[in-house]
Structure formats: C-alpha cells, structure tokens
Image (cartoon, rainbow, N blue to C red; front, top):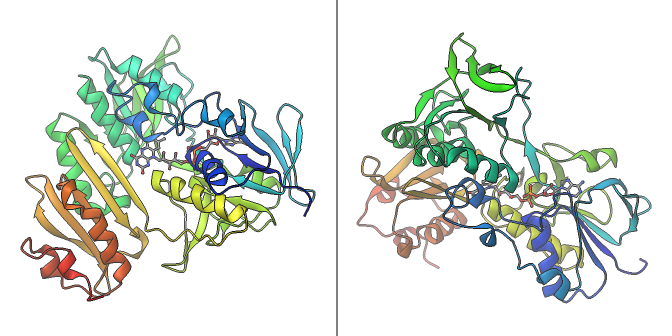
Length: 414
Ligand code: FAD
C-alpha cells in the first residue's frame, strides 16, 4: 500500500469517534473528516430532549471540544460533502471539486428522515427532525406554548417530541400506523405504558391512522387530513416516520447493500479499504450470527471505536450488546438487547402502574433483552441485564420477576 491517508466521510458521532480513536491508537498520518453539515460533529439525543427543552445549550452538543481537531491535526472540512467514491482507485471526490486519495476510508454517513409523499409537505410549519437547526426551529415554535401540534409517527422521536411539546404547554395529537405506539420497538405491553404516560399529560393519540395530506392557507399549515377523512387543526406538523440509511455514495460505488451498508463484524464493507459504522452500517454481530443495523447512540459510539482500530489493521470486532435510552417527562428508560430475538411477552419486575420496573424478554428461556424504567441507576440494572444476556443461560421467569432475587444471583457460577 502507498502512504497512509485516512478519510472519514460523515461528521456525526460515528465519524468523530473514529477520528478520536485513530489518534488515541497512535495513528500519526493524514486524517480528513468530511462533514456535510456546517457544524462540527455533535450529539443528536439532546436535540429531542434537553436542548429542545432549553435545559442545555449548544455547548453541550459537540462530540469533542472545538479545539480538538486542530490540536490533533485532523483536517475537518465542514459543509463539504463527499460526492463520489472510486474504491478501485481509492479516490474520493468532494462536492467542491477536490479529489482525495485514501489508504482507508470510513463511511459514517448516518441516516436521513424517511420522506413520505404527503401533499402539502412544503407548507410553512411542516418539518422533519434530525439536525440542530431542526431542533432550534422547533424550540422557537414550541416555546411560547398554546399551539396545536400534530406529530406524524409514533416511534421514539415522535414520542420524545410529544413530551417536549406538551411540557411547553402546547396541544399535541400523535398519529401513527401502529395500534400501540412504539409496539414495533418494545412490544404492545410496554408501548401501552408509554401511551398511558403521554395520555396522563394530555397527549391525544390517533392510532392506527395515517396522514393523507396537509391542509394550508396562504402557504402555512392549518391542519392534517387523516385517512378516515378528519382534519386535525395544526399550527405545526412534524413528520417523524423513521429514517433511511444514507447509502447513496456506497450504492453508486457498487458497495454491497442490504438495509444499509453490509459489513463484517470488523465493519469492513465489500470494497477493500472501505469501512462503515453507525446508523448506516448493517454489521454482522458475532453474538447472533446475523446482521444488525442499529439507529442508536451507543452503536455509533462503539462502531466508531471499532472502525478506528480496524482501519489500522488491528483486531477489532463490534460485539457489544445493543443499548439505547430515552427520557420523556420524568421517565427515564434504558434498554439493552436484541429485539429481533424476542419470543413472547415480557416478564415484569416491579410495577407498571407505579412506573418503576424492569422488563425482560426471553427466547428459549434465555434473556435476550431487558429494560429498566425509573429504576435506581445506583443498582446498575443495565450492567446486570447485559451480563444476563451475555451469559446465554436459561433463567426462570419467576425468579426474573421476583424483587427478592438480585439479578446477579441469576447469573451462572463463574
Ligand atoms: P449521523 O448522526 O446521522 O451523522 C452522519 C453525518 O454524515 C451527518 O451529519 C450527515 O449530514 C453526514 N453526511 C451524510 N452524507 C455525507 C456525505 N456524502 N459527505 C459528508 N457528510 C455526509 N439514540 C439513542 O440511543 N438514544 C436517544 O435518546 C437518541 N435520541 C435521538 C434523538 C434525535 C433527534 C435523533 C435524530 C437521533 C437520536 N438517537 C438516539 C440516535 C442517534 O443520535 C444516532 O444513532 C446517531 O446520531 C448516529 O450517528 P452516526 O454518526 O451514525 O450518523
């Protein structure tokens, strides 16, 4: 191979973490981070929570302090997307006409809001939600309260936006295709818990129901037409119906795709020298032997670390158990595990009514996923849940539900 020159495409958490890892692992060669957005890489989870609620400022968002890139000799090219990739020649074309040669390249291009062809989507007051500008704009619109907000989509982002909008004193209606919100992510039992939480704060659900179009007057939104012919009054509409992995560069370069960019467990794509990490990567997971594409913070963080090491030819495998969290009103939830392995309803320890519980899902008697809701963090429930999943030993459901049995007692003898 010719001289080292590592290029990272995508200035999100995965890209920035890979850059940090490369320097921490002692890579001293040229390192370029291409970021399409005008801001240096930032964290997205606060955009629908603390930042949107005005509890955190923009200073809480950057992945690394602003001076880190210069101090570590990382060339950060903001607002300059990569436009084309030639894996045969190991060249990447930038939108500004520059060409860069690479010895290894990471695709950390993330995901974009799923577009839906809704007539009226171009009216003022209709938006999708992914970036810090989206969050700033929504915060400005919500902060005064008293507005009719319609959220299209009953997934995590829709639910978090519902919590924020309600907390500011707006009237919120949430539309979704599911019978129960979040059912696709955590099943109907726990989805119903979140629905009740929101209803107790005044959120109205229209489920299952889909938006058929958006009504407006003088270029501004006035309502959302549902598929059953109703019109819901709206001053503001956020369409949050999931994301699609940003695979356009990889697709045009002939890299193998299937629900994102396919990689092995070391995040290598089908093109030599090209790696993928974060929301865009559908990586082989050694635990399940299947490919998993995760759209969560911890996957971008861990994937960035693994990609950084793998690009240096080190042994590195993404084998962490998937994890994510959400905060809505005064409810904090954490979840670890493999939703695709779940068989049957959850086992609950604690009380759904009181809003403090653990939930476990099993397959063939083994724990494959677990959640804690408002459970004391000092008890480190996620550490124990991950250990139970990793142990792969059958666990008696009655013992899982029994608060007198510690989770550590359920682990097999070392
Ligand atoms: P991204 O963050 O999407 O970054 C990719 C970057 O690449 C983008 O800036 C994009 O513009 C850029 N890019 C794309 N194409 C190009 C190109 N050709 N050239 C240059 N740059 C390009 N996860 C949780 O676990 N818990 C949460 O509570 C949570 N809350 C969230 C709230 C919101 C509002 C959002 C949007 C996400 C949330 N997530 C949460 C998910 C989490 O933030 C993502 O999984 C994570 O951001 C993925 O990081 P990434 O680096 O893979 O991609």
